[in-house]
Structure formats: structure tokens, C-alpha cells
Length: 227
Image 1 (cartoon, one colour):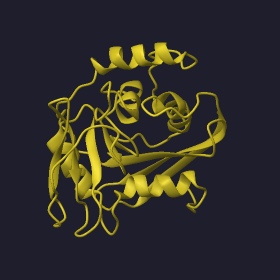
Image 2 (cartoon, helix red, strand yellow):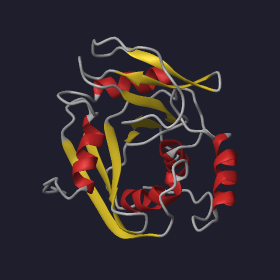
Image 3 (cartoon, one colour):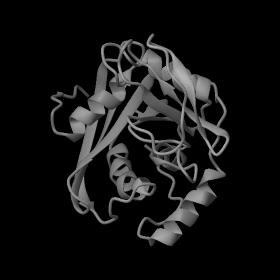
Image 4 (cartoon, one colour):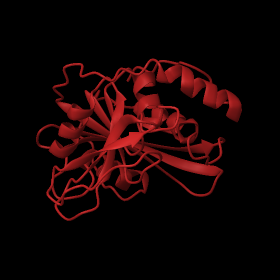
């Protein structure tokens, strides 16, 4: 999978924030005619602020959501765990896993934030720019912003507002289950991001690509590739 080198990763915290502000202006928050045949999910597993981390990318076919490919890498991470700067810690690991892919996804769902971020560049947006691929941020918790009540019915949502701007939405993927937090990553609009997230949710709160990526990152997904 082609990866565009937009900047170095070994930077200090001040430079990291500057990079986020600069790259946020390059995020495309419009639907680019997505009709995916292959959808990827990415996640990372790590322990402590330093040490080793395992990044995982899984690819499923759409609409069956059957597993097509799983790639993982385990490597040292140098950047510490700092809320708001997690993409500098996690993105290099995930990109290394993506570089191994034989099946190139048309859409990537990321376990993390997109533009629902203080500087409008969370992991999903950062990754989308490096891969020049439509991405959706699907987080399990809020980094910034507030929203109103979300009806209990699956598919219900409430806009997530931060600094008087809609940065995402709280989306109920299953009736009676806690919502997830959806935001634009790159090359997609919010209504499309909500639609594709729901389409990828079958039995669980999380969309199948990121659910499987979470299992793979934790070393709990068995898959025998058939190339």
C-alpha cells in the first residue's frame, strides 16, 4: 500500500502540535464517491507509556464483512502516551502494518478520532493523509466536544459539538448499547461516515473491521491467509 511521507515522526511536542495544525488544513471533509469493495480496520495494542506495541490492520470484503487479510507488526514505540498527540505514537506502527497489505482497502475505519480533536487532526485524519485513502474515526470515548441525548434505537445519533462546530456524532450502533463517536477522517463527509459505520456493524457495538483489528492487535485473532 502506498504511503506518502508527509513529515518526520521524531519531533518534540511543540513541533507535533504545529504539524497537526498544518495537516488539518489538508483534510478533505467531502464525500469522494465511496463504493467500497474492501474495508480495513486498524488498531494498536501497547502497555505503558514506552516499550513495545503491536499494530494491526485487517481487511474485510463488503458487504459480506468476511475476513480477507490480517497484517500485524510489533515494534518499539518512542513517542510517549499524550492525549491529543496519540497519532505520533500510533500512526508509525499502523503504517508499518499497512505497508504489508496485499489487498488495498477502499475505506479504512480507525479505532480513534478523526477531526473530533482539539486541533482537528486525530489518528484517523493523520492516517488518511499518509495513505491518501478515505478514513473514518470510530472512537469508544470522547476527546473533545459535547452532544445531546441519543435515542435508544440503533442508527440514532446526536451531533458532537466543539467550539461551536460540528466535529462528529455520537452514534448508537445497537439498540440499548452505549454509542460510539464518529468523525470525519479524510475524504468523506459525516453522513457517509455514519452510514458506513452502521453498515459495518452486525452483532456488536463496534464495526466489524475495527472489532477484528482490536482482536488482531491483542493477538487473539486466528486467520489462515489463502493467497
